[in-house]
Amino acid sequence: MNSLPQINNSVESRWRTTFRALKHRNFQLFFSGQLISLIGTWMQLIAESWLVYRLTGSSVLLGSIAFAGQIPVFLIAPIGGAAADRVSRQKLVIATQASAMVLALTYAALTLTGRIQIWEIFVLASLLGVVNAFDIPARQAFMVEMVGREDLMNATALNSSMFNGARIVGPAVAGMLIAKIGEGWCFFGNGVSYIAVITGLLMMRVPKIERRTMGSPTAHIVEGFQFVRKNLPIRDILLLLGVISLVAMPYAVLMPIFADRILHKGAHGLGILMGATGVGALLAAQTLAARSGLRGLGKFVGVAAFGFGLALIAFSQSKMFWLSVVLLVPVGYGMMLETTSSNTLIQAMVPDELRGRVLAVYTMMFMGMAPLGSLFAGLVAGRIGAPLTLTIGGVAAMVAGTMFLTRLKEFRIGARQLVMAQGLAGGNPPQEIIPDGSMTPPFSGEE
Image: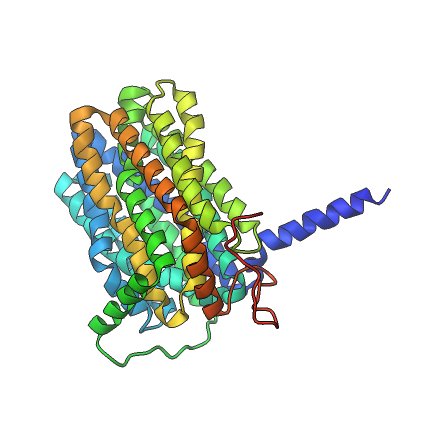
């Protein structure tokens, strides 16, 4: 007779745990604005990819455009990270979002008037890469100011959920719009969508924090790299992330080739394929949002990298459209579980005064290595074909994940020490250092 109230209480408790970061007003504003904006972002990514493919039919140029859009992140992210530790993160994110809006509307104007050329796509993609080099470290570091350290892990997971929820909707909408009225309206929709996130950012009430401005920017950048180099757990996470970004994540660059030449479904099929990876990634983000501590995340990172590679190999061999769609779900799941677990662990292990600069290195490994991988994938696919290229990337991801797992014991020891130093082990209530000076081990890998 009492089972129903118990079930309701259990569901309510789980709901509160999963969405606890939304109790913060600033994060509510950020979440709602970003959700709208990110749908537009995914529309633009699909439209840009299809536009390049429609104009050139070249896998090499697909990889080259991706390279042009992402290499500035690798080169400039350290400067962006230093800026995030020296100036108001809120104002910096507002500036980057406004700049991205201008670039999207420029894309739209050139495409809708029929004047767009490949060199202009290269320029606009490169400029957006420069914007992202400042935006990503600042936005990630700004998270702690919106929710505090106690809900940071949950906010990071919910942010990934939002990103991947948009990944489901955005590509599907883009596929339909491209097929019916062309790529230009996708760019326009993205430009307009930035109004929502900029409005939310302007409405936030963020306590003023004094940033350290003494010393040269160069010295601050070097300090961030030194922190990463000296701390083995952070270094191991970032090395694995860099390998995955280099060899496996560029699969998305080759999706137009799979959609058109291998699966014969065109732009609409491309939207469905990319949406399928979004479903998997959203499930992974929800898996992490429902967790209340850091325990086991180190193991998640290695296992997810291995699973991502395995699923990518299976997808590369499929010649059936709906089977390919199904196989892309675990691809998205493994990719997002690896990257978001990595982000969560790093956020827990880094002091706030270094947060922007360490997250800049994370950005370099996550998005900065991808352009090199995109260029490589495009060139290799032009010679040996897209399926074999993805197979090679999948094998490399499996090897990298296995190597990370062999070092897991050493990783756990170092990670525990860093988390204790920050006074945070994640969770709500957090796993604090307990009175006798010990601490609940967050990295045992046991559930």
